[in-house]
Amino acid sequence: MSSRARARERRTGIAVAVALVTAAGLVAGGCSAGDAPSGAVPSGAVPSAAVSPGAVSPGAGPAGLAGPAGGASAVTPLEPLPAAVPPVLAPYYAQQLGWTPCDDGYECTTFRVPLDYDRPADGDLTLAAVRAPAVPAAPAGADDPVAPGERLGSLLLNPGGPGGSAVEYVEGVARTYDAGVRARYDLVGLDPRGVGRSAPVTCLGGERMDAYTAADITPDDQSEVDALVAAAKEFAEGCRQRSGDRLGHLSTVEAARDLDVLRALLGDERLHYVGKSYGTFLGATYAGLFPGRTGRMVLDGAMDPSLDSLTGNRTQAGGFETAWTAFARDCVAREDCPLGRTEQRAGEQLAALFAAVDADPLTTDDGARRLSEAQATTGVIQAMYADFLWPRLRTALADAEAGDGTGLLKLSDAYYGREADGSYPNLMFANMAVNCLDLPAPFAGPDDAARAVPDFERTSPRFGRDMAWMALTCTYWPVRPTGTPHTVRAAGAAPIVVVGTTRDPATPYAWARALAGQLESGRLLTYDGDGHTAYGRHDSCLDGAVNRFLLGGEPPENGKTCGR
Image: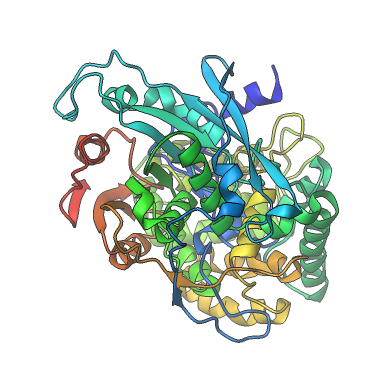
């Protein structure tokens, strides 16, 4: 089986691999349970904590933060670009797409974009896209107000991350989409620059990534701090050596401009779009830059671009604490719960387990690898993305208490997308590269991280310490950041539906409320439930509201709530 086929299989059901929706967020990103097929972990934003040696949380994505010099970046509005395409970019907008059959029933294409939109003469990047052509035979129904056979154009999907492959995502979920939506739209996935099949960045080989994911992110003394700093520096240097000039041109603003080139090449006057997790930041950025070209847009598991990265990381830690509380409440009511019979006891036992693994990593069924505390934490975080993973987490925790770390290691590996042969996709490399451009690093060095720990722990007793130490890699990043915290108004854009889940771990509900409030045409749609993102979970209320919007253009009433 090819690596691509294995990746598709992993993301379409098996194993609880990082949801395609995970992409992103990874501490990007990614997984969004909502759109993932049954059994796949959703993708979307990944928690900072999950990225061992310290990636800036995808949740914090676009925000700005106190930079290395200690000065806070000002929050400014994102200004739209001129409506007319500049003559120097006209050749990119005039390309012809050549679609060819690929990947078991889909169609693939590539096209060129400038490496640097301000200096197009400096060279191009080649980006890859896939589409699932509209299926015209779908019957009309209550949620399908469009006349049979009337096509609405292309619907671009992005699973999040940053770093999630939209190509793999579309190939994993297209056939699960609502029949009415599939009948009216070609479903299209564009791998953003630096991701998947679009000039992917790379940083470390499999063996060194194994070491990176196992690095101690709760240092107890100076030698452990030094080891964590060394891991962060090795990752950053590996990206510099292996990815070169691309590292300076992987920002979300540039990716949004690439979306506009593809929109034009698809022949669509407006961009119709569903973005999950970090994909909401990408979509909101597009709307801010091109409000007049924004069509029916759904932003599910929303990020708040006005946050600085320090605040974003801390509030994301609070999101995972909220998710853990929901898991613990459910667990202690079950006979097979390995954490006791009260929520307080469950938290105490988790802390004791993490401390024991920190002191003595657990053996696993992979004889060459032992479970570290960082991987144990990542395994727990992975299961917070979707409540269908909770039974697997209960079993993994019971096994760990008995001395077997295999279950938690497999959850951690699923989070990173690690293959059985020890290789890794470029998900985490791209995640770091985009985040480190979109925001300045929150800390000038490890002393700043140490000072932030108490505040993080107040927000999240379970995960705060880990997440406070997670943001060091961007401190040593080889290129300077280009983004700052900002608001997105998108004045003049068509209605934009912003979906928030009340107990979302990776993109806390408050972020959805904030983004919906910033957008001039924002409409907040709430899912009262657990897990990361909501659309596609087969909740008739929420899915129906989104599908009616995509098909008929009428957004749900602002503030509408679905779920239990």
